Amino acid sequence: MNNLKLITDRLLPIDKISFMSGEEIVEHIATKIYDSDFSSIRENRGILPEVLKDIILLIDFDTEMNMNGIIGFIENGSGHYFNETLEALKRIQFINDLDIMNNIKKYYERTESLLKS
Image (tube, rainbow, N blue to C red; front, side, top):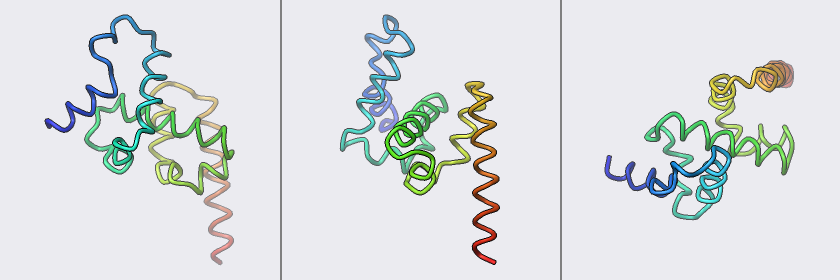
């Protein structure tokens, strides 16, 4: 639990958070999660509060999509959290993006099953 507090205190600037916009909070988290001492967060997301998990999932999704597109997202580490990313999109009510990603998932699953047969 103490480790969780240290992580959240570093990800969220508690002393400044009440003066920050949502965009500034997400930007702050985005700059921190790529620090080397936070590299294990992706593997241990389960200890984080859901709101932080969602922010990190969506930052990773956005980063991967901008750098490598949908195939890059699916085939890289972020794609291992495809379903969790869909759940995060649902929670923030990005319904159009969620529908697109669900269609991509269905297509990808169908294509993968065809390749295996």
